[in-house]
Image 1 (cartoon, rainbow, N blue to C red):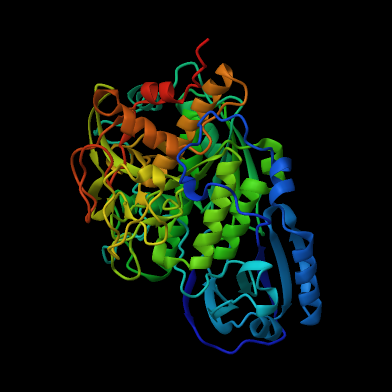
Image 2 (cartoon, rainbow, N blue to C red; image 1 turned 180 degrees about the vertical axis):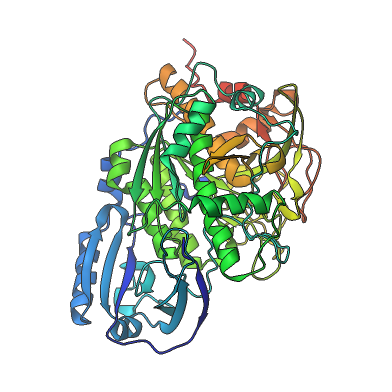
Length: 580
C-alpha cells in the first residue's frame, strides 16, 4: 500500500479535477441513540430488511434536488447519488471546489505503486489544509463533506492514517506491529485449543452466516489460504473480494513479507525511517489481511467471508463502511457480523468523520449486524497526537464491540493463565488499547460499571468491552508467503470474536428462525452485571495493565469484562420462551 508522506503548502493547478463526498441528512433520527434505553434484545426478530430500512432512512428527494441545483450553480458535476446510504459524489475544478467548500489547498507527496519487488516512486496530488465546510446554501440538507482530493489515496491534513491499526509509542520501532513470529518452543495453541478454551458452540461452524471484513491496504494470496487450511485440516471457506473506489487485493512481494518476519523475529533491525520502513509496513498490511481471513475462516469455516478493500482516507473509509452496510453486496449476502481491525486514536480524526462513522454503525445496529473493532496495540496512550491517553476509534463508538487483548498461556493444550497483554517482543513493544472516550458519552448500559473519567475529567464511553488472545508470543499459527508465523495484536482478537458471534448466530437461528446477536453491547453488560462471580459469562482478567489503567474484577479499561466463556455467554443469548 502507498503511504502519504509529510504534507506542505504548495500551489495547485486550479483546473485540476477534485472529488467530494457529501453526506445528506437523515430523514428522521433513529430511535435510541447509543443504546441508552438498554432494552435491545439480542435475539430480536424485528430487525428491518435493507429495503425496509432504505424506505425509512434513504436521503430525501428534496435534499438531492437541492444539491443538484447547487452543483449546477457552481459548475460542479454530480457523479453519483446513493440515496440508501445518503451519499452524493461531486467533482469539479480545484479552484471551484476550494471556493465552494472553504478548503485551503496543500500538496501531498505520496509513494506511488511500484512494480513487484521495486521501491515505490513519489507522486503528488492535492488535498486540503483546512475544511472542507458545508456551504450555507446546503445547511440543513448536508451534514458533512469528505474528500476534496485530486486522486484517491490521500490522507487529509490533520488525520494520521497508516494502513491499520495502532502505532506504538516507542521511538524507532515498527509503528503498527502485528508481531508475527515463527513457531518456536513456546506453547502455541491450535484452533481446536482456542475453540475448547473459550467455549465455541459445539456442532457449529458458522454455516449460513456472512462475515464482512474491512481492509485498507495490503492483500492476500489464495494459495496461502489453501496451504493454511490444508495444514490445519479444515475446509477452505468461501471468500469474496469487494473492491471500493479502485482499491484492490494487493499483497506485498514474498521477499518483503519474509523481511517483515525477520524484523519481528529479531533477525533484522527495525528500520528507522524512509523506504525501508514503508516496505516493512506494506508487508505488514499483507500479513494482517491474511491473518484476518485465516483466523475468521479457521474458527468459522462454514461462514462466507466478504472482504472489502478500501482506500485509507476518511473519504475511503466512509465509502467502504457504507458499502459494507448498505451496498449491493450487503443486501445480497446479508452479513451478520462486520470485522474492523483498523483504527486510530480518537484525536487523530475530525469530529465530522467520527460522527458520521458512528451514525453508520448505528445503521448496522438497527439492521441487526454485530460490529467488532480493535481497541489498538499501543496501550492507553495509543500514539495519540496530543500525548494523552486516548481510545481507539471506531472501537470507541458505542455501536462497536470493542475488542481488547490478553496474554493467554497454554500448557498441554489447556488454558492455564490469562493476563493483560503488555509485552516487548524482540525489542518491539505492544499492549492492548483501552481507556475512556473523549468523543462519546457514557452509554446507559455502562452506568453500572466503574468507568473512570476521561483525560478531560469528564464521563465517557469505556473501551474495550471484551477481550481475547493477542500476545504474538503465544498466538495461533498463520501462514503468509509460504512462511509460518503466529497471530498477534488486538487485530487478531477481532476475527476471533467475529467468528464466535457468527457461530452463536448459527446456533440461535437453529433455535428460532431469524434470531441472531445483532447489537450485542446492551445485553452483554446486562448478562455480566446480573450474573457476576462464578456465573459470569466472562473470564475476568485480574493481572497487568496497559500504561494508564490496571486490570481488576468485573469491567476494566484494559480488557473490558475479559475473555468469553462461550457456553455461559450463549446460554444468556438463547431466546426466553414465555411460560404457559
